[in-house]
Amino acid sequence: MSKDISKKITPGGLLFTTLLIGLLVVCSVFLARNIFSAHRAGVFQDRKPIMDFFLNHQEPRQPSTQDIQHIETWMTFQYINFVFDMPPEYLKEALKIDDVHYPNLPIGRYIKSKKLDTADFLQQIKTATKTSIDSRTRK
Image (spheres, rainbow, N blue to C red):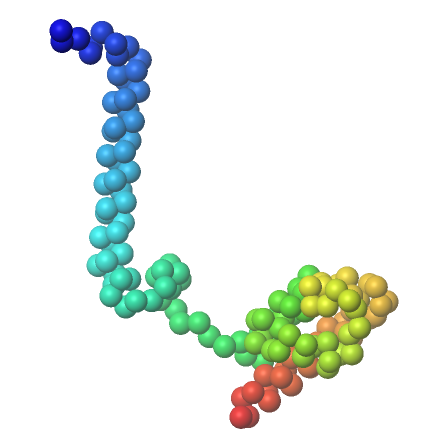
């Protein structure tokens, strides 16, 4: 009453099964090697986030007044508030922005809608941001 299982497996099916098992073994070995490498590098012992490991263990830094020079028109007000750790309404109040789309509004779009001078308005944003950073560092 024993059935010969080899009659039910086709040569193509056997090749596919063998390749699939081989691929699983290779992936498992690759994963294990990476986990052991990360363990040796101290990723798990320091209890730091994994991204720190990939970013060369650099500690996050606070933005400085030098970073303000990199503010550009493609950025949104929300992005600037986040990067420079300012309250969400800070730029709205400091620059008297009345657009309903604030803070999810690119600076360039705001400049065009209000027909403002780009260089002048960017300088106003940079000045307001510097004032915010300076007020925090004095405390």
